[in-house]
Length: 136
Image (tube, rainbow, N blue to C red; front, side, top):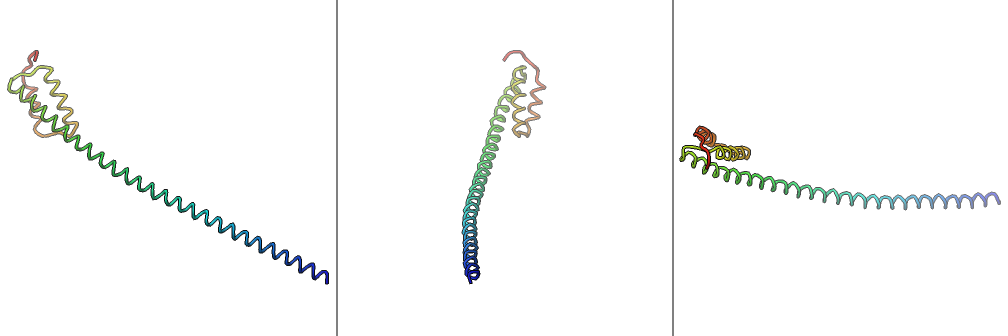
């Protein structure tokens, strides 16, 4: 009978230990699930915020490119006007100094580098055909 009681007590204790371990494991699993859920939520939030920041940067880059294109167009217009003025002056005078040619060549190179084109080639060539005079 004592053996029976001892087996029963040991069984109850062992059952209690197993139940406690199962409960403890379940608690730990729930704790881990909560932890990983919070971690997943944090990562999702960071990913969403990062995507928003990338979209904002892409918009900024597009605006900067538009601004650069506008500046280029403005530069071409200014260079065109300056070239026209200098070329017309020298064509009317029917001569050009070395300095005048250097200035026209420098303006023309910038004009082309900024995308300028048109009838400016012929006009620059006409100035190059003019006789050179010292001074100016």
